[in-house]
Length: 245
Ligand code: SAM
Image (tube, rainbow, N blue to C red; front, side):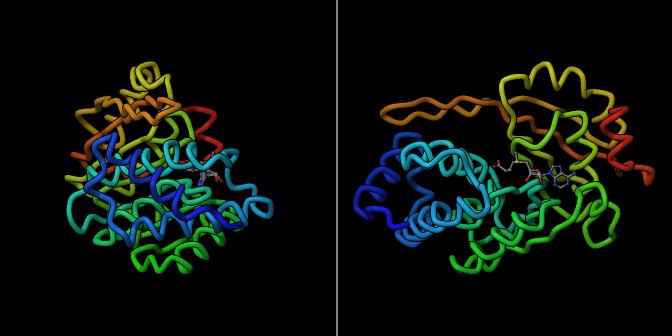
């Protein structure tokens, strides 16, 4: 599907600059976002990738939202995106931060194949993709406590998500959950889970974004990894979901 280049580029630049993210965009990133949008909308029918097809909404809800995370990452960071789905935040992070490396994880092979194809099409050499359940991958030595940052957007409730994600984070790194409105409630219920899995200093920071027509506000929950995750975690998913810590 073809998208009007001039319209797309002007909207992308405006939303990013109105939200203090303008310095993250260069010409190459704009071109990659355009190519990603065309590719995503073309593949949407086959893969059921996103419910959002309006260009302005894609820019605000997908690209600018993920850009707020991209802006927080230190140079050369290693990131794991748990439950990457249609490639969020993986693909915008890789477009905006070619210096970082990202492992995109999802249990659904079809979605991983799409993300892998999109990364290849856009020349995003820092992206690796793997089809696996997060709780299985966290037990593999090549992934366990190997990442500066684990992140997840719209995957599960925080007690469950913490057990899926914190085992991937190395000491001194952080887990950043891109959450919806219930963050305070979820965090208050996840204190035991966080402490058990080696997390400390959990806090909420709110992302506030706007375009000409819309506002987007949602919390990030940030948890620092201060102690190793005990080897008994993560448990099999049936246990994690039936008896969250
Ligand atoms: N992060 C994307 C986004 O924000 O658009 C996708 C969110 S989608 C609602 C949730 C994704 O998490 C799905 O693609 C699903 O397959 C994946 N997922 C859920 N539980 C998982 C697990 N235990 N391991 C790996 N992937 C999982």
